[in-house]
Amino acid sequence: MMADWYRVAAFGLHLNLQPLMEFLLARGVDHRVVEERGQQVLWVADENIAGQLQHWLQNEGVHEALERAPQQPLHGDFTIRREMRRQGVGLLWLLWRYPVTLVTLLLGVLGALLVYWDGSFGPLTSMLSFQPVAVTQNKLIYYSPMAAWQAGELWRLLTPIFLHFGPLHIIFNGLWIWEFGRRLEHRFGSLSLLTMIVFIGVLSNMAQFIWAGPSQFGGLSGVLYGLLGVLWIHHRLRPSAETRLPGGIVGFMLVWLVLCMSGVVSGLTGMGIANAAHVGGLLVGIGVAGLLYLLRR
Image 1 (cartoon, rainbow, N blue to C red):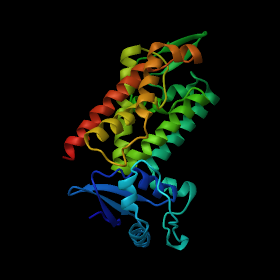
Image 2 (image 1 turned 120 degrees about the vertical axis):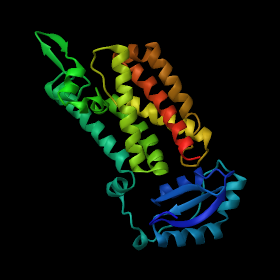
Image 3 (image 1 turned 180 degrees about the vertical axis):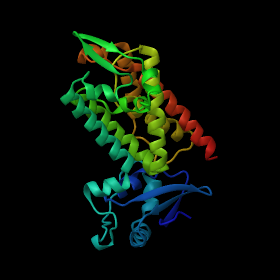
């Protein structure tokens, strides 16, 4: 039994619960779907809402609708009575429900503002870069990252993921971090997502430095490709409504990866692309998905 969570109903493993989950998310119902003894079990965080949901499921023919049209959105008049909602609304609810995803997004926005204010090679930006960098007589000087680590600046292994070099950079990365991060945080919990972000972030940064050498790079794209890898492979190994991505997303992201590696995106935007971070993040995410599958067998 999950502490402070309330069981609502069980569904067969063959059912696609994505329409039901999207229906509940749209109404602000905090919920989880967990595989237990060959069934998908729906849990919610509020006892009163659990009772309302049980009544709604029994009287609206939801099971039959999922069997009959598994890809169609659910419709109904289920409304939560406001006095029975614990989670509140707006930003506070999002922070309570998806704290790691939201804080990661906010740090990315702050990183973009820092680069805009301080410049790509300013002293504050340099403090968060993978290796120290300075501008001397109009020349860029990159210092050894290992010397910085030995001096105790271990944060440099991770903090480049928060640096973004323009509005399109943070908008693109932010949208996908929200899409992938909240699904994983919902499925595996906040601590697991935090561990994934740190692990993928550090290894994707190292991959970029090893491949490209001294350079100024940053962004959450390596992390988002890692989270994509986790969702993609884990869903193939153990299908779940929570890790199911809308059709076409995996294909789009892989095509985008190839376009970035081909130089097309750099040519159109004039921006350098950290391709090794993208590929490294994706491979690490695939490995994490396999590890999660083995640990939860």
